[in-house]
Length: 521
Image 1: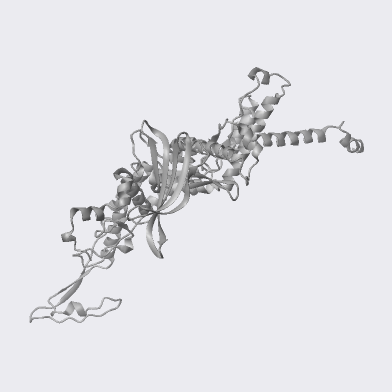
Image 2: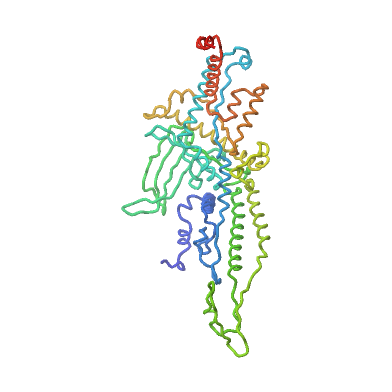
């Protein structure tokens, strides 16, 4: 082992600051450390090892010096429950996608009786419908309903999650790959900090060099240069950052944008990554852990109270058995004094105070997160209408809708970049989608999300409301179907009209198919 007493300052710098850490820079390194710490905390490592200063599980801690008993180490991990519930609130509903149809025909002409859409309007309706169907297909292929819940957890833990858009040349399909933010290093323009001009994805891995396995770093780089995106993928030695292997040579992707989309959590304009409510939740969760540990230890001392032996011979305490029905024989160490043995009992006087304080801290976590003290799964009873639920869950609903604003813009950007990526790959030998549909989308990439809250199903009330609005001329059938979350509105309208036409034909006594039945009656 090296003698650290004779190391030079340069040697100490090499030990304390690795080339990889120096390359990351102080701000990026601290951000990654904070995010990795949050992930460890989420996984249940909620105690600090005094020897290393790192988070560890409760079972990995050793007995502190100076104690005659093993203090209880317990992790409530209510922190994880809060994050999971909040992610389900944001992405647990069956969300939909809507592609607006541009109004080509004159609006006054569409209100005239007997209006028939023009050829241009029909083409626009078909374009929008096919665009919407393509987006739903991409969602199904990428299992987005499950991925978004997972991404929502990462976004809350690390204050940001990132998605890479990848075109698989073997299958001709687009893949949306969500990555944790601690693997992502953004590069912004010097004159505009919101203009992303580069992105690095780094992760540590093992690599074999000359038959020896070493620590290495894989780095994927996207860079905009001259209005064109370049990509490269390589392996670097961690000790000196020298390149040891090239996976993909630096080359143009044929894109004028970065195929990367960020999903951040920004509560303040001047807020940096890693300063959201997560740090506050950790502080409160630490208090809950400490309270539970103290309560368990106190209960142990109450149940297994101290035994006091007085006026007995030396060594008598070591011979006393602590067991049900045990018998102890004591002898005095001097004449005239009788030995005595008794228990020092407590009184459980801390119960109510502990309960009040515990609920106060737990309530603070709910206040910070916006979650109510109950969850939708616990409402398996009748008697609550939609208005009551809105009042009961007002805080989390408004909090969720605020997060949806960020999700809305990022998902729309993801959809737009995906279509532009596909349009740039129309000449690929393997292409899994209808090329004509991709071409017809043109440069109109407008799309929006239809987010749905994961509340108990109140569809009946919504249908009744929409029915009244349609009857009073306040809503159209198309608008009602969109508000109900129907995926393909145009196809559903045609299906409804077709069924109505068949019903009218069946009820028409002058219909040729119904003549025989009418005569027989």
